[in-house]
Image (cartoon, rainbow, N blue to C red):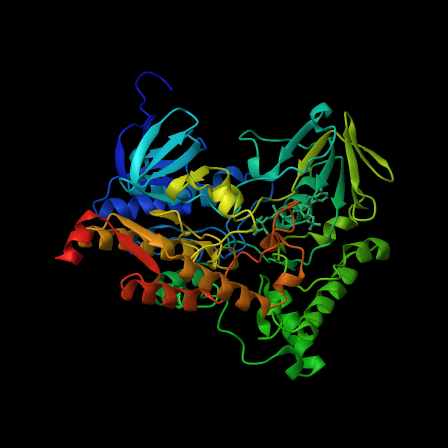
Length: 554
Ligand code: NAP
């Protein structure tokens, strides 16, 4: 920075705020916008050197959102909706990051956001109902409320392979991608992982690299995105009908309006011909709709099997080498129970001469070598390794902060057998600490922007309500929390989700408790519940504070 330029972001913090927000992604930015508008003082701490959260870190080749662009955007400002034009059906990472930066500038949000600052701890002082938040840079501030806007997929995980430190080439985790261009030209590249990220990155890397070895542990279902330039007619329609579209999304099952209503029929209620025609139509349209075209594929294994077999047959048609095709065919779990990727040319990439698929389920990776890696069966020479190995999802970024509530109780200890929350918004014993899209809320099973807006609105309205009542404290009641956890588990257990080894279940992290973390009861139903709770004076929460206590005893 030269002497005349001034960063719009503050560089250090002391003092006291109404709220500290951790993270400046979609959630953190909206929190600043709303809290400021309501007259609260707010300070955001952001670990990255810019705003954007997930879309700041995930700069890997091919990174793209699989929610259609016009729905993956804020709904709080009609002006913003009208002035922004998306260029593609599914927005690529650079365009989303540009949008987020536009929002930060347009609403002058940066002056409350301190970048390059990772939060280290948050400790509650119960004698005064406030939190002390410290950062790795040495800031120490107090705040009545802490809002964890840390994202569900923001603690990247590199498996604990022996020898990684000795690797002489370059290695990257997709969720912590360098801010410089990474060239794969002439390189022998190993990609480990075939989740949504690997599936997006592999075709793009293969188009540049000398050779790509894909190390696959579990084959994944994937559906064609059919991405392309934004249809101007569709964009016009969307802008003309934004209020209705957003309203529909808010009360829908998963926070999208474009995906339509729950279908009337089950997959086994129709003839094979009709079902195949439906699946074929979904395959051609692109996007994640295929398993959602019937109302029972989430619950009924036989119904789900029909969609699995349809996709496996597509893989067999696309991939020319029958052996490779079979290696790519997922078996043993239901489609959709591991997060369903959508792709551009993923399976066809295995027809390239410079791509080799390696099964590391049968022969796991044993060691990273200075010039490659070794499985239990063979050695592979590599110049570059890309870890598309995922995240400590949903709880990782929360537990990365040393959070201590009443009586110094640690969140890490409270959640040692899995996360427990009331509505995914709070956890008992940690007053005035809110989570955005926390475990126990629809979060990762929904359009994140829809869910983020709902949470920030609920939390800020709650803060406003407490202020009006003279309350300084709100805390989830343990009984209400237990009942909510029970409900989340009950709803989840009616589906096929718990049968898969997914990150939804914590199954990707050795030793992580096996719990189905998101709430699958639906975005609309969840919103009704949250609104009811607020309307009943925050039922299931305990409110407290000096003014409130004296008003009640008067
Ligand atoms: P992921 O879904 O957890 O996939 C990680 C991959 O790494 C899996 O294939 C996993 O195999 C493999 N893996 C992990 N440890 C391994 C090991 N020791 N040896 C070999 N393979 C190993 O992670 P992700 O692909 O980064 O995606 C995470 C989530 O981010 C997605 O599910 C999605 O919600 C989100 N995302 C969204 C988009 C989008 O909007 N388009 C794009 C990218 C990511 P196993 O399956 O056997 O565990």
